[in-house]
Image (cartoon, rainbow, N blue to C red; front, side):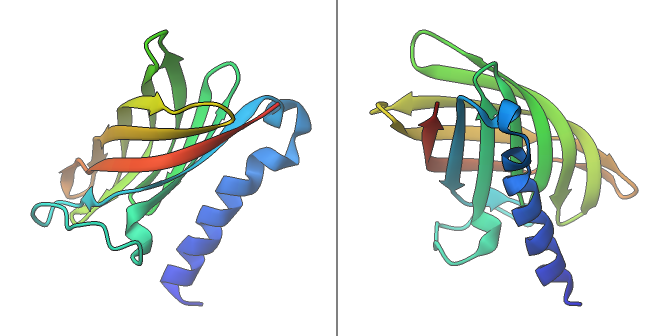
Length: 150
C-alpha cells in the first residue's frame, strides 16, 4: 500500500474517532485549518489549497480537551480559552519535519473571531520533538473555520 495513502487513512481515522463516543463528542468544536507549515527545509511556501501538508483537523471538547491531526503531527492537549476571544493550547504528540519523526511538546496560540455557531480562527502552532536525527521543530501559521455542536 502507498505510504501517502496509509498516512491519509490514519489522518481520517483520527479525525473521526471522537464520533465513536457520543458522550465525549457532545458540545464540541470541529475545525478545518489551512496554512503552510515550516518543515525544516527553508521558509514555508504560500498557501496552495492543494497540498495535503497544509491542512489540519481539530477536535475540541467543551471542557478544553483538544486533538489535532495533520501531516506534520498528531497531538493531544488542553486548550485554555480566554474572555478576549483567544486561546492557548498546550499538548504533546508526534511531530514530523524534513529531519524525521519525533515525539515532544506542542503549543498553539489563536484568536477566534466572527463566532456564532461557526468561528473563523487565526493561529500559530509550534511543536518540538526528539528524534533519532536530533530535534525536529515544525511550525505553522493557519487560518480556519470551526463549527460548534451542542
